[in-house]
Image (tube, rainbow, N blue to C red; front, side, top):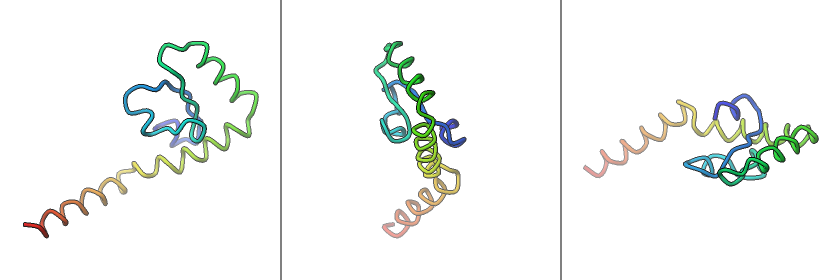
Length: 87
């Protein structure tokens, strides 16, 4: 999320919640856990194609806004309001 907030493309493995945050080919490149060659190839690809990295960085910066404190607070408050209406 920090790299995305800075407008940088992400190279990461498909573990934990990463695939839920980073869409492969959109905000960055995902590889299988333990695939060292895949990580190296992905970094090389981004270094050789700055336009691709810039596009992914912009997409990531937009995506990560969904997880800002303001966005999160709005969702939580909305859910509390819904719960209170049912009570």
